[in-house]
Length: 401
Image 1 (cartoon, rainbow, N blue to C red):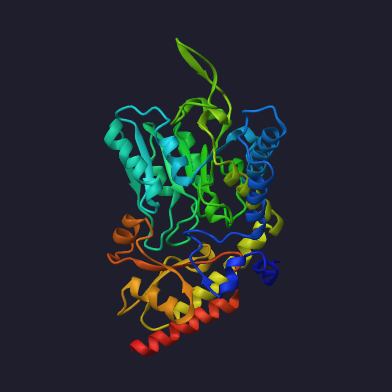
Image 2: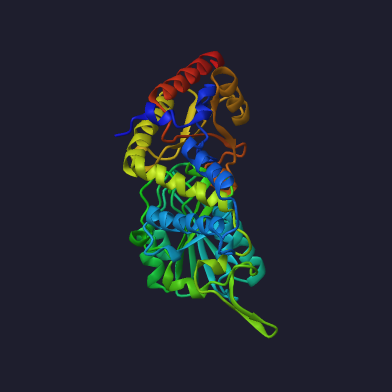
């Protein structure tokens, strides 16, 4: 069980009194992560894998230890399956433009996706002539494996799904979809940006071929992330960039790429950010991912039940048992952006409003052309903060009535 008040002491940003409910966009950063990054810049700031001197050796070891830590964090078989990227978006694009697609191949994805797991496949359609088929979720945002049975066939090269919806918090049945994809010889990519910070992720149990996540959503720094590439499929993927650090041998006739994750990490990486990401993963491991999930689910239930009881409030998505701590809603008579601004002005509550980088879902599935307000929870949020939010909403409902 989490000691939330103790956890809150780790986040200097909370001392300003803000109620931060925009964690699906980006989480806050604990002091332990900031201190670890500062340690790198103050004590052993140097490039990695480039020098035999002590500073470079220490930086290199910290960087590679981060690879081991992130492998443990998501249940990878070995650290060589971990490629460091800037964010989930970059990881997905590496896959989209590193696989070989032929005209007539098919990609299956869904209308639940963030643009980062949608636009790369739409571009593949334009560039390579592949077909892109969209699986539609239910009105509550739930994906049915039976719909993938219909969509995935022997011409399908890749299936791309989100693990957790950034708009509705719904959890995708990844294992069932993986089985369907692999029965037809297709690869499975999972957008884990909204899952890795909140769930205990095991990529081997999920049986996915690629898994992408962003550090800035899991207490880490911006500009850090991971692309997991299953060892068995790594040779099928060409790096998006080549250059320094990616090659084993070069002469005037050509070059030979390295076989490990370095072949995907061209140039000097974001060393300080990767070291900070390691600290963030260690921090979440120390808290216990199951403790984090249980805490968020309880707060999510409070939000859902409280909002659902208010006249004029429309809540989207399923009941709490089918989702994590993301809740999208609207209040009749107020534009989503206006409502978000009022919550900030009245009570210092930070929520997101608009399309949430998921326009097909918000426009076509939810039918909300102006968007929604989105509240998203994390490990440092409290029941007291939820009560302040609900009290503010009740006051707004009375004022509008």
